[in-house]
Image 1: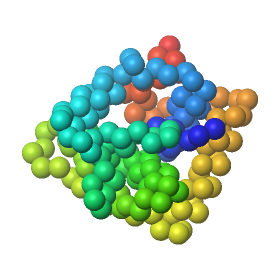
Image 2 (image 1 turned 120 degrees about the horizontal axis):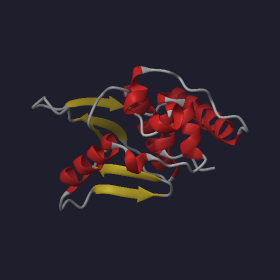
Image 3 (image 1 turned 45 degrees about the vertical axis):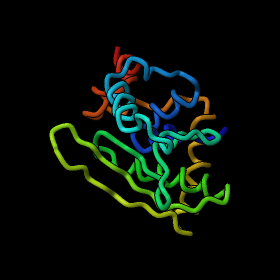
Image 4 (image 1 turned 180 degrees about the vertical axis):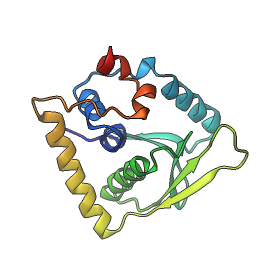
Length: 164
């Protein structure tokens, strides 16, 4: 299976969510957070040529001369976003495109955005390849991972599936 940025992000956020999404149970159309994220992307990309680029199984928010840019509305799960960006950098590298990663966090009540830089080095690339294998194994297993019972579950698109 081709691992997407969403799967990579979900793997860190919740392995049950990753499993369900990877097995084509997509409940994101019901999520207010996902809708807000899509509106942010549309507002940021309006009329710009370098906005949201689809390559193979990934969608990159923006490419500049030096950076691959991922735009997020919150830094609540920044580790997941960093690995998502590392996956994108790896896929670009496989195509001969070498970039650095930049995560722009645009939080609702703040006027300035937070910027986090990410670089794909040899060590991170090896970890990433291991993660891709782990995600592939997770998605292909027969047993659904258990509910994690975290406060973040209440905002998850899969909340009703897991709790109701």
